[in-house]
Length: 261
Image (cartoon, rainbow, N blue to C red; front, side, top):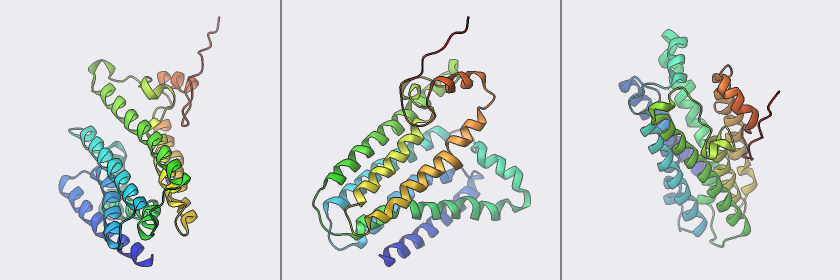
């Protein structure tokens, strides 16, 4: 298992250096967002072929990761086309000044590489294991993954189409899956990794893979996902009304509007 982790760490390090160089050429650190999903595909395929013998659980997780990673990378590439650098990276470019290159390398690319390695840990455990029998936990994991993939893919697609319509410029998306949660894509992302954790549970030391879904849930709720967007729209009156009737994260039926006479 140590070799799996070491080989994956080296591959991710080299991969992130390559993406960093690409970002320098394009003068756009947003490329790291596209590279995120592809990085998981690389790690899953690398560890899959490092193991001698292929089993159902390994094939399953590689297929699930490839479907998720390709969709995510494609969506972000389409969404970012012609938009320039994402507002987060553009702000850091201003804030960091002369330290921009050094801080970008460590704060964005190397940090994301480390997070990628930790979140991919259940994939490494699964691909290092043997045995092909399907269990209840595998089925539970597939169900959670499907729920997560639906919310993430549907949320991303619906928001993309909404923003492409000229008449929606400056408006808040409140339809489709967005009427049940203000962040369906982030909720979906966490469910995907809780699903992969369940698939990893039957393998040796599978319980240690809980670090992956816990980390991604914490990041999306408290660091770079929900909390960042909530702050961005904090003074938006339309968003405040939307927030009053719609759950922030876990999907649920919208609250009925209360009219004051």
